[in-house]
Length: 194
Ligand code: NI
Image (cartoon, rainbow, N blue to C red; front, side, top):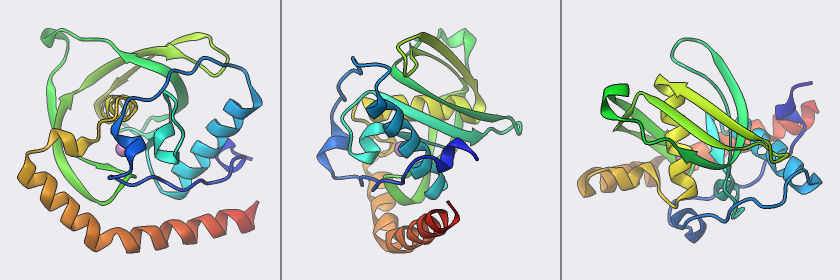
């Protein structure tokens, strides 16, 4: 059985909640059952919400941690987690800016175009405290940057003009009930299949 089904989906925090708007605490205790459980629950939550990746503060936990479970634009599947991620500051000759639509599980509904480097290298630790380096390109690079932003209290909305931000929030207000209903339905089908 896949790791996604070991955990229990948790409630996803929504833009406006304070925990999404500040820097998270560093993970300092590794190899604990609590951290294992949190990671399993984050995979389950991401799966139920049909997300690509999710940060700990999106399930209400104040820790620098995110997980990903997604297929990139070349059809390659990526799955993993990282604690205390720090993005390399890549020189402009090693990356190009890509403008692509981006959404967020904590902004249910809308997608808006965000410019981000097409390549990202993130350094941190795994759940046992072992140093890891994760490199992504294209859509996966976008995810690594989007999730690292979350842990600094930043949403993709904060990268939009105020006009675009307002339109995204209006769209969210109109579509969020439908998104929540879909998640609830997937959550109960997950519960009944395990
Ligand atoms: Ni997000």
